[in-house]
Image 1: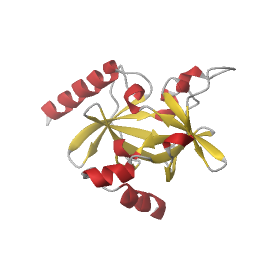
Image 2: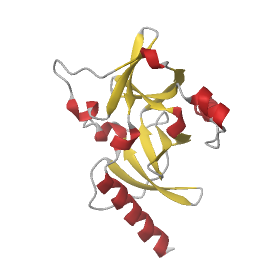
Image 3: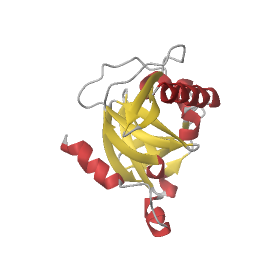
Length: 181
């Protein structure tokens, strides 16, 4: 439990001034999905929360798990593994929701496990590979490969994680839930 709290403190709030933005520019929140580690620019991350009850949305893509109520705000959540067409996993006490802001919409990403916040300098980011057998299911969301010590992190483009149809479904469901209250 302490791990999630520490990361929440390190991420801080999103009300960053320009100096703070400069120091955050090369920082990435990393998490595990399947056998790989992914990174999201920290500037997209609002917070990390414990897994909680999700209200399903009927007739949506399988990776859109539903909606959660986060301090009175209803937000859609997607399962990253299912989005990447990986095998589903059983949620447990290490499962977290990374709350991000994409195209002015707040979205939760269900991930197996938070890894750490790392700094990846621009010169240590390579374009994704274009040769060999590439699992295109998640590589279309990856804009770069970040070298961190002896390991690599697949860097995600959060704008591509959700398509416009997903955002409109989430917004409509959000409106319907709010109208019922």
